[in-house]
Amino acid sequence: MAYYLVTAKPKKELLGELKDSLNKDLFYKLKTFGHALTLSLKDARVNEDGSAIWEEEGYCITPLKEERENVLDRFFDDIKVLRVSKDEGWEKIKNLPKLFTNS
Image 1 (cartoon, rainbow, N blue to C red):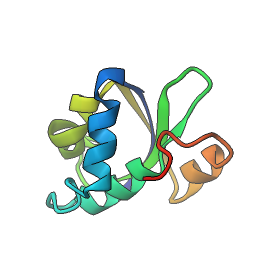
Image 2 (image 1 turned 45 degrees about the vertical axis):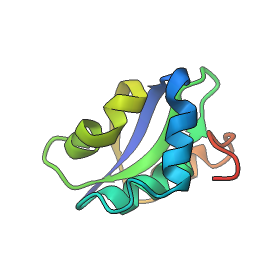
Image 3 (image 1 turned 135 degrees about the vertical axis):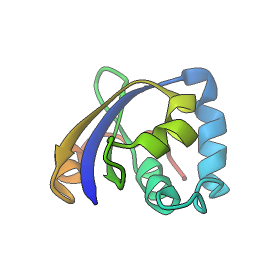
Image 4 (image 1 turned 30 degrees about the horizontal axis):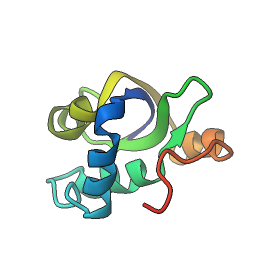
């Protein structure tokens, strides 16, 4: 398992759908990554430039391949990943505002 600091541009027209999906835990049961993805996106933050940022666990040789194919590419553009140690990403972004409130 690897950890990544993910930055991505949210597709604003789909943010409501993403929030609803997270609140209903619709991704939670997706094999291998659903639980981690759900928890990470619920705690995602917003950079000054409006991009979303969060730490994500990855299980594929290609970083976040399954997550992108099943969820992320639908809701985000310009996805970038940076390898980090566990919790290093969260520590870097802890003071940024949350992407979603009441998730």
